[in-house]
Every structure is written in C-alpha cells, then in structure tokens.
Length: 128
Image 1 (cartoon, rainbow, N blue to C red):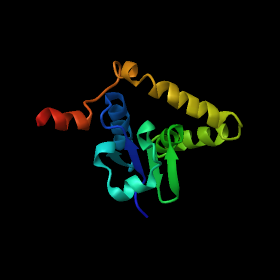
Image 2 (tube, helix red, strand yellow):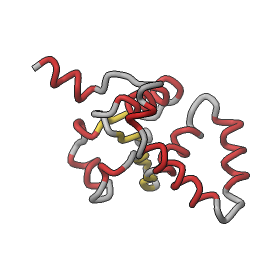
Image 3 (cartoon, rainbow, N blue to C red):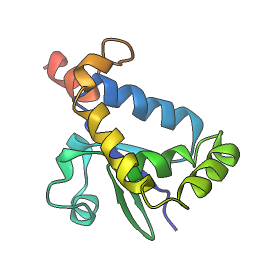
Image 4 (tube, rainbow, N blue to C red):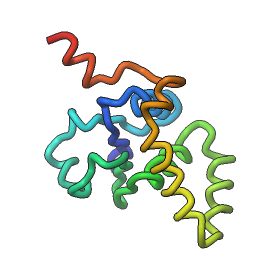
C-alpha cells in the first residue's frame, strides 16, 4: 500500500499553506502540480489543475472531497472522522462541501492575504 498523496496547485500561496498544514499533521504525501510523475498524472482527471486531489490505493478524491479526506487523516482525525461520518448522513452534504470548496478556491488570492506560503513553483522560478 502506498501513502495517500495530496496533489495541489504549487503555484498558489494559499494552496501551499494548506498543503504544509496537512504535511505537518499527517502522513499524507504532498505533491505539487509541477512535480507530478507520469504515473500519478495518469490517475488524475484530465482537468486536474481545476482543484486539489487526494490519491489513495482505493481511488481519487477531488476538490472538496480531497480536502475532507486529507483533513480526516490529520492528527485531529478522531473528532473530524465523527463529524464527517455524521454529515454524510445528509443528502445535501456533498453538494454543500463542493460548493464551499469552489467558493474558497475561487477566492484564494483573497484568502492568501491572510494565510499564505511562498509556493514551491515560485521559489524555483525566483532562483533561475
């Protein structure tokens, strides 16, 4: 079994902040779009750059589901797992989760003014 892998936009400061958050709190492997291997890219949807993805041996979780799945794997997992299990009982949960993800993602420049890290893709381009 391979470690779950969070694939994210490594040219986004807000996205990088979240990736580092998960990296510090879980054994999920973190890979930016710029560092995708051919094998990993093949597992992603064609429009993979539209959102984050969590790739596991069992499948690929995209957008809001990727963040949900990464979050339940953090050191906060026990209470988060219970909350997510509870929310999944409701028909509208998935729709709300995805709408919320898209709302935040569409405003990541604004959110990046509050929480952000220098994205790896920009560090590389600044050096060369």
